[in-house]
Amino acid sequence: QVQLVESGGGLVQTGASLRLSCVALGRTLSTYSMGWFRQAPGKEREFAAGISRYGFTTLYSDSVKGRFTISRDNTKNTVYLQMNNLTPEDTAVYYCAAQQRGTPTSMGAEYAYWGQGTQVTISS
Image (tube, rainbow, N blue to C red; front, side, top):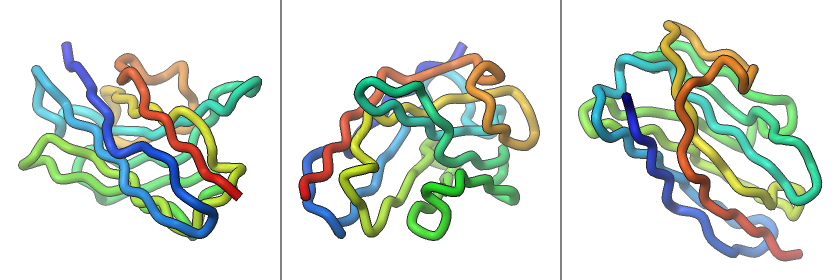
């Protein structure tokens, strides 16, 4: 079983950038496709980005496409989410998740393992 630990969240102003990291403990990261999800206050969790086991395929929601970039370094057992041009609408708790598929999906129910989340807050 894999344990996921996110970091990199914080409070920044509109237009700023943040890079989130998610380290996988206990299992080799390349076993999993990975996803980043987010949940804003009072809203349901939503998919943001996904990446295949070796990084050849990426998937983005329309709300983050062109601003966020997901990547991974399997040698470091880490997946990243580079977030640029942030707006207050990006304020949420961000979670990384793992699924034992070759390619990522946007369905949270298909991810078996989840991190504890990291808070991202964007001020206007």
